[in-house]
Image (cartoon, rainbow over all chains, first blue to last red):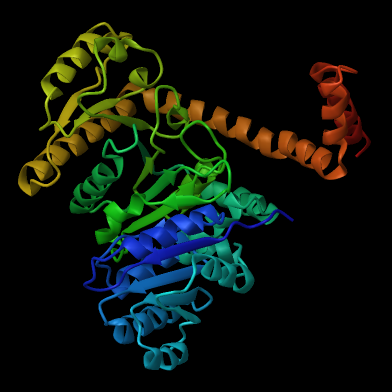
Length: 133
Length: 324
């Protein structure tokens, strides 16, 4: 059986133009052998979910530094479920206070990475948790 | 009808994108699906957009989507970006320019990585086009990887090819060269607000006047497209580009050239299918069995030569086929 290539999408929801981190991650995912769809800044959850389905990604990585993660991250998960794409894993990262993490996890965000998380640890998480369909 | 095929023909994006993924990952069942899908394909008009990295292909594709949607056409986009030869990874960044259409049900944008193909496209592009055709897209835009002078596989897949140039990339001799400069049905001088655009226009016109295409009924027009950050003029320029492509479509239909192109496309598909059905299985089986390594070793030590090896493999394979 041929081996599947992992496809991931890196997206920045909401009014947040700070995409240095997202770009570094996209590059790092490329170097880890993933195909990385990058959608750019200022995306609505609707745009992100639609793009994830069109691109048939295994994983959506959301980056948010504006503080709106509590509203935006869960909405992406919700929209993917509505589109019958609940199998697409959603993870998130950015400036996220410790106390918000349980709320996000409960909303279906499978992992949350905060400042200080190493690039290797994120790639490793993907490699051990994402089985391309 | 197969449930997946039925869904794809009804326009189901998830099923379609899944099948494209299976094609890319060379899952054997995908081939069977394409066989079933094939009768529902071939009705879309395929536009190719090609040119150097950063020439503005994605931005123009986005503008074309907008123009075509105004005319109530449904649009599929296949945007190709390069795969790393070292890690197999890729940054697929074309859709950044097209995200405003993400929620439009009449637009389906799918990014593809080249995965080793060298002609400016991906091996899967032909079948990915078929999936979008089966979905009933009126127009399919194929945006190539950023290319140089001779990655011109796009001519085997598109009905109408727009070559995107920018000013300042060299002198007149560049326009005389074979390859890329010969394949355009429409030339775009993008970023035409920049210095050198008029000179490039003159050089292109000079080249085109000598081209056999000029006497063939279709002299490729040269469309100037200015600053994408000036919304009004940019919209007017890209509307003109859309019109030129539509004129070319009409020309192809009326002159009978469309049939010629579809014939060429069919031949490419046979080539591709032979590669998938003959060449790749042989190479794969030799690699898995370890024979490839042994042959390479023998050739390296000059115990044999590549042609003898190839003949031996071919004889063995065809004998095996006959026995079957």
